[in-house]
Image 1 (cartoon, helix red, strand yellow):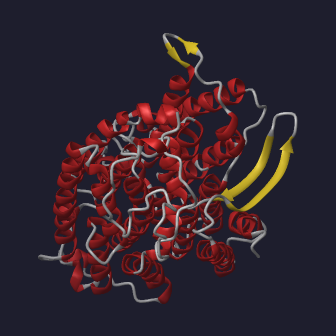
Image 2: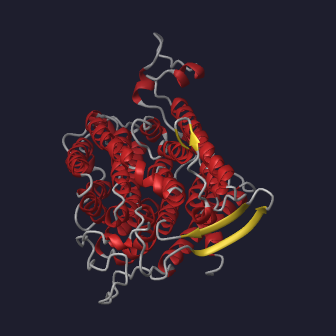
Image 3: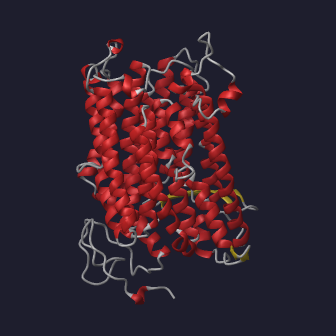
Length: 565
């Protein structure tokens, strides 16, 4: 099992998608069963991966390598460290939950599940790839399912539905709708997503190809490049090649994160996407940007990362505040959650920019925590839409009388998104704030203001949906009663609260990946491997931070003798 764990996780969804090709849409339960079965296999293997990953040993584990092209130096090289392991688990959880959130889809059910499985598998592939070629390959693969899921199973927004001619017929000129920025049709959302992600992905590809060419190693292997790629200080256009590559990599991948001002495709995509697609979009697709920057820029260009990462600390403030204010004034449930996700991704960039052990660990944990919290909110927003056929918050209200279970789960989802104690989001937010304070106090103050904004717009949305008088035209709506409807919410709530109350293993796993990475970027040489959180630290200097004794321990000044000269 250990030897092929990553292959089970990665290829189980692909196998399910392949099997569905040979099943008729008339066999709806068989289609759902195959999709759920393949997602369940991936989930079980992901849980095994997470709980058998050895944080004391650290490094990349469960490694598999299959040569693809010796001449080009390309291999299907898979492996996970403490950063990739929790994100693989998040992808598997949201895929399994999304299968049941989409259980009642009747329009081309088979095709929907095929593309959903491929989307999840592509994100998992990015989190596992130790080869730049396949990292980019899986990254680009995720765009195709998103385009089809939005364009075929998505929904139009209120503004689109209001665009009618005098006879009351919808204007269906597809070209006009795609390029009309005021229409917000699902076609426009799908096209905008593809154009944004593809254009900036080309920039990232240019950076990857420059690394491949000027490293002179004839390999895309990240582990080889991070140890031997020393040929980046080449003068180019008044600067050095390493800075050009870093900017191409950073902004190429930051568009999917999404970092302001490259964010505008994301909320529109959230609003148009079906619920399960929004869950994967916000939960793991957006994290591909942060993860790819960590895997490529941090690992291969550590000195340049240390020099240029303050750029992210400036831009993340705009992401946090802009996204928060737009979410507060938005009237569409999915726009509120979508802009909330864009705002919260600024916290991840803040944790990354601080280049601190605590802050970067918090950023990775926050990526996992945000996946669960936002997955809950999008799942419930999808349920409300299915029952009322509207996402317009002012026209709704009083739905708690008809949907007490959904209303209760919505409260928990809001609490998790805000970062209430008892949820894993709280731990992540505190770590980001504490770890970033010494270096970026202004950004930390902005982040705290962003938390207050989150509280304001989520409570405003919750009140508008579930409390107050209810329009009688929604009296037919009903609660989630069936097991298939409640199961995905139970899973995400259990994970969010479970890791919030028992975070030790998650923290240990993440720190095992973060410690050597931060040491590499800040040029601090760890004496030995870091000890696990639940171990007793020896009295001698036996870890990167021997003075650390708890989750939020205070760091002492760096010993100059530990600097690589």
